[in-house]
Length: 131
Image 1 (cartoon, rainbow, N blue to C red):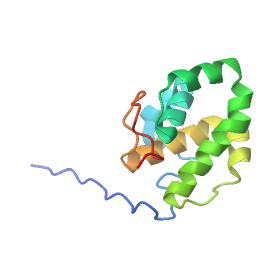
Image 2 (cartoon, one colour):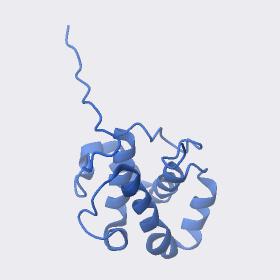
Image 3 (cartoon, rainbow, N blue to C red):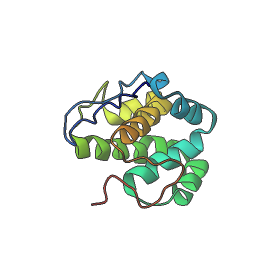
């Protein structure tokens, strides 16, 4: 009988990303979800960090995607990095979201899943910023 090995999660403030910025294929389900339903993935990224629901962020992204990408998303990534003591890798949060928004969302969702803070589609009330 084979025993599945589950990797241990890093400490909350390990200072290391579990997933590199350009390793979106490490979690193919999150990668495909972000690629084919980017609006939903962006809303979940927002909800997973803030602990709110997906409805408001979804409509904000629909109505003004550049505002969300340039103004809101970098702040969310900063919150994620500060919560877990992660470096600004590969570059500044704003620059990464503006140039590679899909990759930033994939990395963020993958990181939260690895740390047990992403439960899937719009699990409100599970935000990393909540106690």
